Length: 256
Image (cartoon, rainbow, N blue to C red; front, side):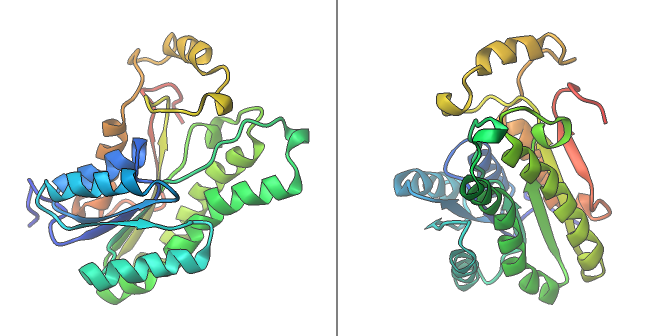
């Protein structure tokens, strides 16, 4: 039996890119559900410390770790720190991503590799670091945050589209190989979510948002809480028979 109010009690979750937006929402929802949380960011120490403070106020342990998720050594050290502090990493959520707005022929090989390393390879690094401990406990949850672009495609973001599609493939590969070890791997694909965005990478966002709102059945943008609740389900015992799947949280904009 699980604690319905604290379904993640006794677990530890690491969420990359959790200093703001969706990552922050996931980390705080997990904390409210009883999990200790590892808050990760790249540069802004103040933001991740603030999220960790909010998590502690919910009655759980929390630590803030600055780490470049595109550096496999840094990812391994972050997981090691989490294990030293909390004993284990039971839930690993790959959320951090870069979304540069670039026409296909303007993407240099160096830029292509940089985005793939940060948005896709980083998820491999995190899973590779966390899976041995999960296998030892015969329990674990891997969750990848993909996106609308990875399933419908989009111009001017070929590198990100490729990464977001690749995350689902990575989830399936992990699900098949580690299912016998009590580990699940799934993907959450957010639709149009209300978050803080860098205007230079979303030059036409508001215009496109208004057009999309006319065809989204629920007629609203999603919230970070919508995504966090989906992740909570996949991280819980309730989703123990769900693996290798993608959960589209998009208000019905696309129905796959």
